[in-house]
Length: 86
Image 1 (cartoon, rainbow, N blue to C red):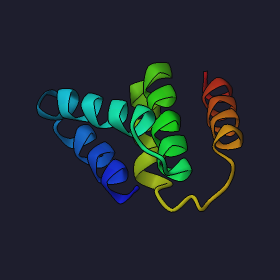
Image 2: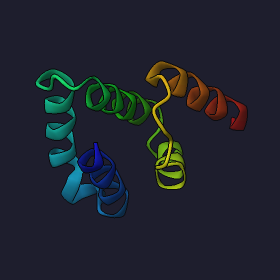
Image 3: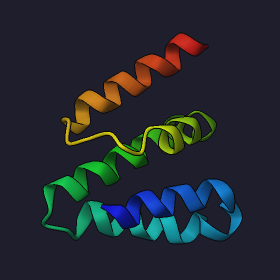
Image 4: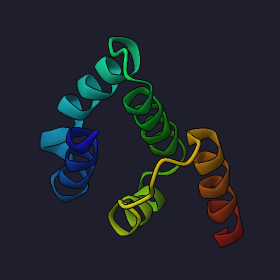
């Protein structure tokens, strides 16, 4: 899980260099892991990145310490915040 968070942080600092690597990491973390927490976090990051990369940057860097709350609830909250800012 720490690797996912670190990769996301690096992606926002150097997007062109990390885009392919982050894509491969998210794919493996969502499809090839047996750890539910890792898969849920990877799905959360994937969906957030699909929604709005610039908005996600703010939340990933500022809210890295989100503890083990249901990933779907976190996604709903993040999307709600994004809609409020529009």
